[in-house]
Image (cartoon, rainbow, N blue to C red):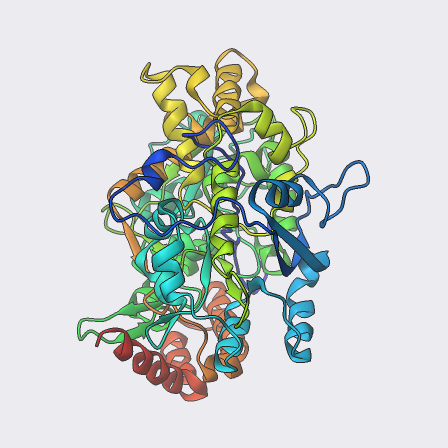
Length: 552
C-alpha cells in the first residue's frame, strides 16, 4: 500500500553550461577574418601590449578544476599564453571554491580593495555602481569589443546588455549564460510506455493519463502497487515545466499584462489552474507521497530503484542523472505538453550565468578585458585543432579535468550545446563530414555512432543529441522563438532584497498545502492577498517604476 502524506514539491531545472567547441579557427586566439575586416569594425586592441600590462582579479574553482605539474591559478597555460602572446599579465589575488566565492567577494568589497576586474553578482554589481567604483564601459564596448563578443551578446538576447546598463551607461559586461537551452523537457521510460502501449503525450490530460497508467497498471510487472507516474521533490521546482504548460510562469518571473504593466507570475489565474490539476494528480496517487520530504537526491534514488516512470527535467537529463540511475533502461524526451495542445511556450529567465564582469574605475587599459574574452571565445568555442583542445580545454581523452576553467574571464554561447545536436545531425544527414567537426562536437557524434552500433550504455547521448532527442526539441523552440521572457531583468529592488525569502516561503508552503489537499484551492486567492500585503504590492510598484524608465 502507498502511504498518504500531507505535502508536495518538485525538481529543479538547472541550465548547466557544458564544454563544446564550434568552429572557424585552427589556432587559439586567432579570430575569424570576418570579425576583423568588416567596414566600420571595432577599433583594434593592440595585438600585444608592449611593454606588458598587469591586471589583477579574483577567481574561483569549478568542481572539475585540476592543476598539473606544480601549476596554479597564476601559472598555467592560459595565463602564460595571455602574457606571451598578448602582453597581458593577470594576477589573481585569491582563488577559492565556487561555494565560497560570493562570501569572499562581499568581504573584499566591504574592505574597499577591489581588483582591476572580476565577476560580480547582480547585487554586488549594483552596490559597486552606486558607490561610483566602476569604469563606464559604454564607449569601450562600442569602440573595442570585437564582433565575436558582440555576436554572443546579441544571441543571448537584448535584455542581457540592458541588464548591465544603468542610467543609459553600460557599466559591466554580462557573463552570458545558456538559458535558451533550458526549456523543460518531459522524460518518459521507454520500456514502461511501450509495455502499456501508451500514445505520445500532446496535452496535459495525455500526461495525466500516462501518469495514471504508470501508477495503476503495474508497469514493472512485479505484481505490487509500488510505482508512480511522475517524479516530484519537496521544493515544487519540478512542477515549473508543468505550470508553463498552463501558461503559468514561476520563480521570480514577471510578465506584461494586457495594460502593458508588469505582473508577478506566481499570482496569476493560470497558476491556480495548474495547482488544481496537480492536486488531482496527487489525490490519484500519481506522485510518491513521500516526495514532500525528499530533495532531488532522494527523488533520484526512487528513479534509480525503478519506481518512477516520468520526470520533468531539462535538455541534459538523460546523461545526468538518468544514465547513471537507470543505465539499462532508456528514457525518451518529449516536448512539454500543454493544457490546450498548442506548442509549448518556455519561460526564459535573464540569459546570464549569474555574474557581471566589472572593471574598477581608473584601471589602465580597461579595453584589455575584450582581448581576454576574445581569446576565450576563439580557444573554447571556435577552435578545430585537437592540439589546442588538449592543451587548453582538457588534458586528454581519458582525463576530462577542466583546464578551460583556468581562463580569467569567460562568457558562454547561448545555444552551444544545441549546436552539438545541429552539427551531429548535419553529419548524419550527409551535409558535413565527421572530420569537419571540432573536437568536442566530434566526441558527441562519435558517441551517437557507438550507440547506433550497439553500445547501448551510451543511450543518453542519443536521447539528447540524436534525432528526436531533447536538443532537437529545444532547437525547434529556439527556431520558432517560443519563449516567454522575464520582463524584469535588472538587479533586485530594495523591497525584493528585504522580503523575497519571506514571500518565497509563503508561496512554497501554500502551494504544497493546496496540492496535497491540506488547503482548498481557494487558498490560492488568500495567498495572492497575503503576497500583496506582505510586500508584493510595494515590489510591484518598484518593478513598474523601473520598467517605465526602460521604455522612455
